[in-house]
Image 1 (cartoon, rainbow, N blue to C red):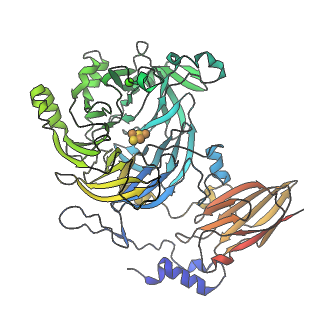
Image 2 (image 1 turned 180 degrees about the horizontal axis):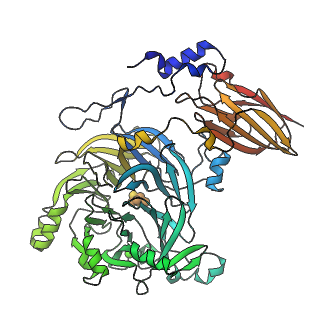
Length: 611
Ligand code: K7E
Ligand code: CA
């Protein structure tokens, strides 16, 4: 149990009893953490995480049209935290502070679908997470040490920024981001001739530099790009395309009997860039990728309107989900070299097309040669064996009839989109847990009105059969997730900020006036701010900068200005700032919103706005 004096509850008692003086926090060790690892149950996987124990995996969930990312403990399925990304979060102040506003550049709102981590040698390196914004066409990077967004890149020339995947090998230098919607390029008044001519709408496969968070280039296509993947060799990225027709209505998008899996040749892309074979559109290098005009894109025909594309953890196969076809298409990645060399036809990269059921959307892997595919229409997860599917394909029609590849089918509740197994998008897929991100929960929870939660179901995949263990409600609407072994993340995550990484970190409180601009600088040490009052004049442009000087783990302060709709939280050693116009005269209490101390309620000061 460790030293009882030092747990958080006792900390409040001690500090409370010690009085209001600042610096009482120093009575405590800086990193007093006593939680334990979970004990594994007997006879299969146990989901139980007892009080005081920690989960085995960090789950990173996209938040869909909530615009955020969520951190879920697996296997408990407890929501541990939320990382605001493209949204406004009034609890933490994301979208309210100057720091977050600078990253959001005036657009707080988003639609996150795909969260993926940065890699080294095909396994997460614990540095970054990347996430798309389908609404405003950008990509954010979250630094894992603070679990906070540190960069957002706006991507011009695309719409429906959807499939996203980082380079897996040798390390993440590039991240690819797809445009699901074709548009005119450029898409502005200069090109209004194209508005009514969908044949002049194009898709883009965008490549982003993961460190610089700048666009490397875009590959222009007639097709749209839906989901994205990268291989385990650093040679190719892939996407599915469901609108090779350039349709603008559903029936037009379904007109062709087939669509494509597109494969992008990174070596040739680098060559084309070096040779200057691009034009610049809105400041971005755009490479020619259209059919018949370029050798950097390979088009593998697949049954019409495919959706997910996932790479098996051994790096051998890409699995493309049929969506409107009840099959998945298995592409052997080694054959792509041959197809690029013109030795085989693109369709000869396909080594199996097994039946899986109705509405296959996404596939994940157990690392033991099995794939698990989500079936939206059937409302099932189907486990199937990749080698058996390939073998049956070789033997021919009769062998395929028996569906020898299917291992198990599990009913889920209901209408599943993505599924993901633990570590499945890495070389170290461990085949323990599967999460089925179901779009519909219907009757699985207490009725909360017409808008119901999603239903994330936890499934034990350690045995032959898929075993449903837990239902977990999720607020609208996660699309995808990854589950990362705890050891790859935990040691990277910090308990406090580096105070002076923030150029405005405050060490001395005070008020400074330059004309009509007033800067209020103050420290926060629970339970006091560094100032008891600040006086400004009506109409002043006020910048408030606050630094939390408490080094105690988990001792965060809030800063809220009454009637000014300003509210944010500062974690240990963190600095945040806000700028506002003092347009409401009077006495306005600035108070701490985040419970910090026995005298938390007394942690307040006056902002006096004089006329
Ligand atoms: Cu299938 Cu946006 Cu990955 Cu939703 S996407 S389910
Ligand atoms: Ca189509």
